Length: 209
Image 1: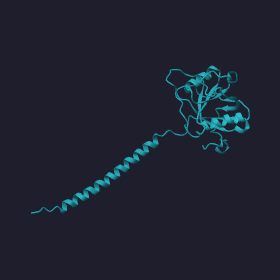
Image 2: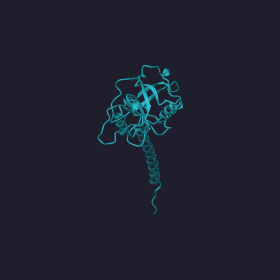
Image 3: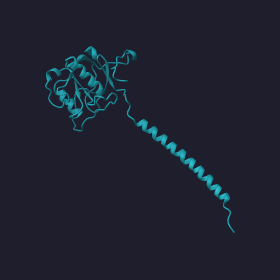
Image 4: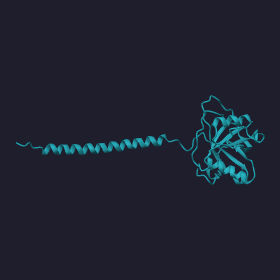
């Protein structure tokens, strides 16, 4: 006599349907959790420790720029520097003794990333009597990726402030100075933009803040 499996098969079908539904919801939930964690782990574009400086001269570069202070080396931008020179390093990578060392003394130097560590650039600049170092990315199209500059694990330190500048900003500043036959800009650093209405902050036209 053949057994009757109708009700049992129906029960299995219902069970499989419920199990598949629960599995689908679980996968969706896990996916949402993963996505949430991934977004939370992303590095913020701007940090509260970012600082600003403004170019006073030449007129064609008279904008406000954002900087990312170095981590693990250098000092803080404590005392404001007013009407100080921002001088291009020669050679621009700042890894060796500069040929324009007299022009760098008691000014801020603009150096390009690459060739040696961030810390080595800062130490070399400090030897020449520079007040602070701004290191711009060597990618002239970088208009939004700020880099956290770390030390190089050589157990050295640099006793002047150092900060990272977007490659697009550095490229435009350098090109603007060279267009006018200048080797420096005049800047104020750091400046407090929190007391200035947002619409009055003169941002570089090539960036989107």
